[in-house]
Each structure stands twice: as C-alpha cells, then as structure tokens.
Length: 171
Image (cartoon, rainbow, N blue to C red; front, side, top):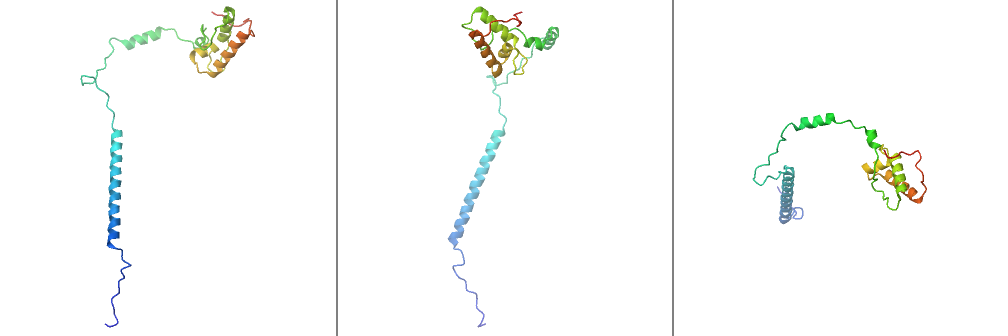
C-alpha cells in the first residue's frame, strides 16, 4: 500500500460555502417576487371580471319598471296602419323653404326666390337622391351640397343667375 495514495483535494476547485448560500438566497427572493406579481395579476383579473352592479334606488330595493297601461302596442299598430305610406321620392323632392347653412342676407326678394327655386330643383350629386336644399336639410355635413349651395348663392348674388324659366316653382 505504499503506492496507493488518496487523491488530494485542492481547495480552489470547490466553491466556497458563502458563495453558494448567497446565490440560493437570491433565488428565493426572485421566487417570492414572482409569486407576489402573479397573485397581484390574478387579483386584478378577478376584480375586472366582476359584473358591475347597477345603482339601487334610495330605498335599497331595485326600482320597479312600470308596465304601460292599456293596449299601447295595439294602438300604435292601428295608427301605423291608417297612416298613408310615405313615398321616399316625394319626400326627397319636397319643397324646403329655408335652406340650412345658406345666408340669404343681402339678397332682394326676387334673388331669394331664384335661389330657392334652383336649390329645390337641382339634385345633389352625392348619391343621396335629395335636392340640394333637401340634402342640406337632412345632412349638414355633406361637402357636395354645401359647396354647390355656396356656389349657387354666389352666382345669384353676383347677378349671373337672373331667370328661373323652366325651373321648378314653389308648389
């Protein structure tokens, strides 16, 4: 047994005890923080998934919905059945006495009549099917009828439009 020796252990090859326990402590803190964040996320998700409650009446009981008295639905259906049907073409071509967005100040009576006749005769080209006056009545945001009404108003003011021969008259 002279030739057999136990292997010699070098102290440099083993990690020091304080280093190993320091990393282990860091891992525990990371795990604790991760669990805390997970629990906070679950709590937030649960709170947001709850159905909001409607406010109750001051008495603490929910407010009762009052049922309509009498045959309201039947009355409405009878009124709808007896009303004359609305022709959409006639509605879209109806005469508009005041064109929204058009300032007729400074026009004499004849110029105002010319303007109204043209505004109620010319069709808007935006695709709505209304006259220029009708389009302005139903949709003040239409860029096409707005520009055409302004151009018509300028033409009447400048005296470029002087006759309404063959143009629709007020019914």
